[in-house]
Image (cartoon, rainbow, N blue to C red):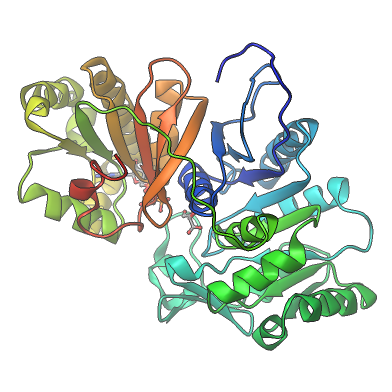
Length: 428
Ligand SMILES: Nc1ncnc2c1ncn2[C@@H]1O[C@H](COP(=O)(O)OP(=O)(O)OP(=O)(O)O)[C@@H](O)[C@H]1O
Ligand SMILES: O=C(O)[C@@H](O)C(=O)CO
């Protein structure tokens, strides 16, 4: 990606994602569907030259900031994408509809509709993503076999989800009328879905939450919605859109060559899957624990972590983590306060990530959305080419700003327990 202006390219899809790991998730899904994808961190500068790109994914951190801020950043991202000629905007939020009752999904979607969607148009709301075991049945969202409100999301520290009914969740965040399209209409095909959109429009409804039980439903929805100015959802529906764009042919995706070399993992996620991944990794490779309380007491944990990495990285991947059990996290939060514990941890892990790159690390996995935000900012990454996924929602990215290295941003609950061991040799 040079900065020199050459032949103009027109990506067809512009995605605005409300967090960094969610952005990687949707970018990976598009690559899986045969698209060439660039992921930016923050809004791309007008001077950034993108070549041979079908889709641009803009990563924001707007999921839990004040709604007005989320709206402002999302509109700026949408305008930047439209100025590059994209035909369709996609607002990507979490497949578990992570949001507070005040937002931010409703306010951002309303603002995007207001500016980019003709009056009377109905906008789809599609959190379902069967590849991640997120399904929607009669408007009710399931995580695996659990109702959303009975899944681990009920305890999320920032956006606890205590209702599973998507129309009701969204209606609490918008004045626009929210309707629903059931799976039987979707099974009847794209024309039936379009008829349902017409019926909702006639009743002055602005949003349509769609059932999604399997990938076939996403393919039908993609065919019905290709060309809609704004689509909203998790990372499932982009695959339907991409297949419709390619007339149903699942194309071979571009092979992105990613750097090889010393490898490390930095984990700040305390989610169940990250904890299982660390336990599996620990059985054969060395790990270093970053304790925020020790840092607050003045211990130079960052220097110790980097010494540990220096000694071990020549033999294979090393893992540095603050990941701890809920009891240990609660202890740190009691002693330091919740915000301060997170701040110290993110600051230290991102400094360590910078140190690892300085030590020659060229393949870095970062676990956790907040942690990824801190690390990406610290490393100054603004743009990356998206490679294939090592598991649903977790693609390798190859940075295209500054030193070239590979980075994988893993959402807390994504991947299987062997991911930290198996991710390195994938797709060589
Ligand atoms: N030992 C610890 N004590 C207190 N806070 C911690 C500790 N380890 C990590 N944290 C904080 O917990 C938060 C974890 O959030 P993060 O978004 O990185 O992971 P996640 O919620 O598992 O990921 P995702 O959002 O992708 O599902 C971060 O703010 C991190 O700094
Ligand atoms: O949609 C999802 O589940 C993920 O991309 C995500 O956003 C997790 O925070």
